[in-house]
Image (cartoon, helix red, strand yellow):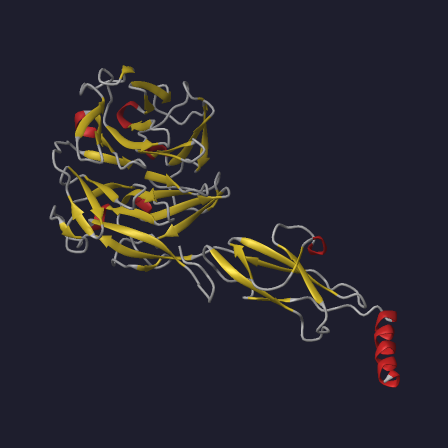
Length: 424
């Protein structure tokens, strides 16, 4: 028996003498695909490694030699990265294997509601009608609301059915927002009011006397001038793009104040009280409380944070250039929305595009720039016609008020989901 055992020892010893290095482990599935939610990762020893080699791994960026001994498939939250190393007492450790898994989904555009014919018919989403929908909002329960400017109504899309909440008497309702409790806020532009529709359907005036002006103070005594955009944060504070006054207003605790703007028309940055805007039409707030403004007349996206106003994206020239935020261009951006990851989506109306600002870069997110022929499908080939409103829901779906087409469009992620992937 010794004569069979000794050569094996000598062979292993010889490998050790020449500094034999193990091959790295092999992950399954391979990196480089787009995944959703979480996936099961399997690690296998390379075919050239001895069966007795062990694999150690990490998912938090640490050196895998300091990680966990692999004993079977494990769950990785996406996006995430696995580092792994093969080890054996007789050989040198393998090079570190690194596999990155991303949630970079593709997106597709579909018609969420409307026939394309102007009208006000309720009913099944794809049989109902809109008349120049100007804004769109989504609540925490998956309901979608639109400010249907041509019919003067706020419409609700829930469970594939479009309905019109009762008790409405709006005049040019340009803006709509929804909170997590299902309350809906309306920029009732023609009446110079901000209204509220509760989840139970009760309609009331939240702020404004109906007079035209820029008076601050008690909500029902304050005045606005053609307010067109509205947003609400997690604490229930309401923000208003007070378009005719070139101001951003705030409604909190029953009091209206000026959040930013001097009332003059311009594009001055700096302290909020002295900054200027030009016909701001849209306003949005992210999870951190940062306010974004679609400064329509200036072709800019502005940012309000810590009492200061700055230019978030755009040069001020009308155009469609993508690229670094400071060099990009917009052409009458009307509305915007922020997702939970900090990306900002813009309804770039006169460019017939939905744009995305992410990581300091601006890119066309959906649309070709042409408004004809009408086209659903992949974001790179879909078309829009004067998109005026944009919203994001908690699942990462984007909704566009495609005003010129009298439609509500949905831009949804499409994931590559191999066995073991979770679909949100």
